[in-house]
Length: 136
Image (cartoon, rainbow, N blue to C red):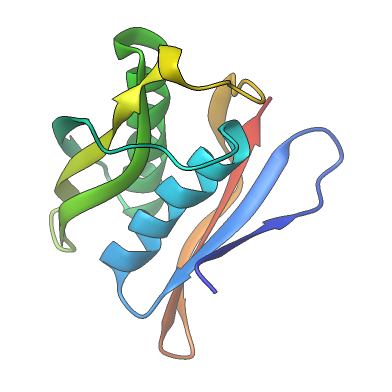
């Protein structure tokens, strides 16, 4: 399982999973894309990013916030992330988002913001688990 949506009273909550931290971050992109868009997104465009934080949670927050920034300001819909490398000591990452122009897809919902509410990044029984709540 790459991710699953969890029940939440007013917002969207999900967990992303992987054997690696990079894989879990990558799967969080899939969760956000799945919530926003129904169907397959063509990989026609690329955006490379460098992101940092003060811990894993702030790095995840900034990562998801970058996705929302690309959607809202660059009209870019991410389908997945490639070449994701996380420096666990410096809490930084570099990655390339792959996706397409937003105008080519029907947006099913809108995300106002990512939140720190109930957010965590943990290694549980040899699996990395990320939990995120998105304000909709």
